[in-house]
Length: 413
Length: 224
Image 1 (cartoon, rainbow over the protein chains, first blue to last red):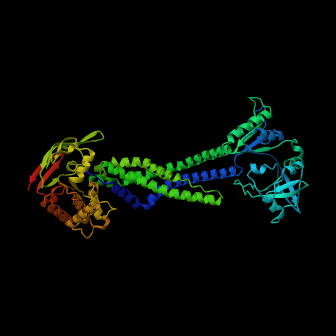
Image 2: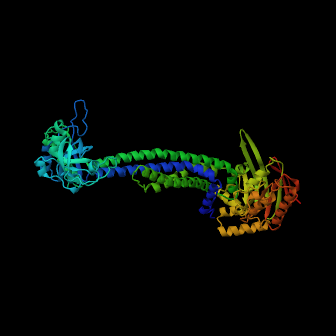
Image 3: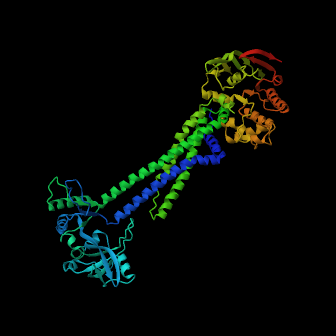
């Protein structure tokens, strides 16, 4: 004896759903919203991760950033990165000499200053660097040249401009050879940097002027810092694999240089981009999971909605259930029919929610100038999760239907 | 075909125990036409439910073609109802969403019949009850008499051994009722065993054997 084929039970379940399109639609709505919310949150989170990755990689590849750190004071308060003056030219030289895997070591100081040229003026960052800076930060010179060690030794007042500064001061004109005044001191423009564009956090990476380290220190920043102090040392490792080793070597060299005893805190900080990237990604990932989990609560609410309607349906269709049993439906057939109904309601809701969620995420990405990330795994997860919701919340109503006494059920009006 | 011995059914309702059937014994032979009569509460519906495998007796034996039906599992009872029994109810009990043809197909779906075969058989049965031109109609597009004929066609779907009809003319006007009774008589003369449950003497007269019930016992069992 074979019994009803699964295909027939599916047909019965589908028939009942199609018989009440409005009610079925409203029942699925909870799952639609739940799945759409989960998909949207996940997609936005992935987009944010992508954006952060792009931004941080844009700083330069295989980069280690060394910044001063004020040692912990008695009160345990820590100074912010860059607030100290513990790094000096001697540290740069020590790293250059002693750290094997360092491809480029670039010290820098930065100050804001007013720049004037041919009647126009602009406020921008003046970055005092050595020629190695270009290599360390993956920068290029689009026209003219970078100043060299001789310019630096001779204390020449030469500058390489970011494209934004050029546009602000002259518009389209070629600035090479022109004179500018930074805080009143005359500089000659010898080169223009290639554009790096907007950083994804909205900061214009082309809005800066590079000048020799010594010149900027003495002319622009002046008395606020010690004569040999540097604010940041960028160290480019020869390869990604060497990053960790290079970072450890820098730590060792600087501790020796600063005569820090074992057990004492460092007065500097080294960060490698890979670990910054990893930390940011992990933070955003955790945040995304949190958002998705909150959104998943609405999926559960959707499941309760399905359960509610299925219980109503079992009550309404008690006579139908009794009749089916009288005609030879086994309890299992009735159970399957009702369980399938709720799974189908939930699954269709999941499909629609998936579509809405992806459209919504793409829309937000378009409006917010945000990279759109398609969470590929979200598709099977959303669909299996919504089926699961239907199964879990449909199980009890289906069980109730299957336990009905056929005589009682047939008698019901 | 059927032997029942000392069949007893008791229900617990609150603190009271109600005895619906009180030690009923009788046998039914293949091809008989039987009317079970009695006032409501006499136990006739309970007997029909047990005969049809919708209910189990509290005590006693129910042998159907040698099988002890009282000891069947739920699934065995479902298959028993599906294969051996055809039910006809007072209120027709057609599924409103389905066409006449689909309603007749229903028992065959649960028997696992192939779609084409069961559609042909359902069409043939509807022809037999005179509804060949109404197969695609839904129950609400059919008159009461037509609906009951669809129900009769459905009861015959899996070629049952026993047709059980509970007040089959109760919801019909008398002229239509006579037509439906005529259909039962025709099926009976073709060899089908028919058991009608009714409180209407006129309906009972259409059967060749009459069993009267009162307070869960047989008070009369006569052949005409």
